[in-house]
Image (cartoon, rainbow, N blue to C red; front, side, top):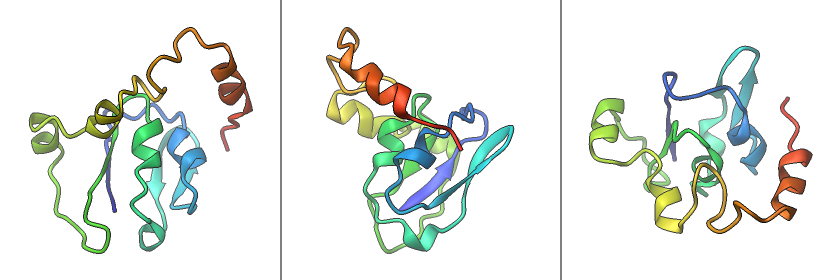
Length: 112
């Protein structure tokens, strides 16, 4: 379940808002999105996967809320760990840096 949006790391790009298949987030003009419908989170990790700044933490516990401390998550290397485990860099699949077809996805992404 989504547990954290780091206000210090989030750039307000809204990649998490766009990536979430369950509409868990609400975009906020000029700021980080908010977790608006946490009960709808399916723990799919897509928001964390697409975040280019490692500003999100999704707990692997799907049905239980965790009490999280951002500094402890950082110290443990958990922010961005799902991307690293899958070989992604900055919200992009590994090996796509020179793949121009990936730009089609970026151009199609519309920030609310």
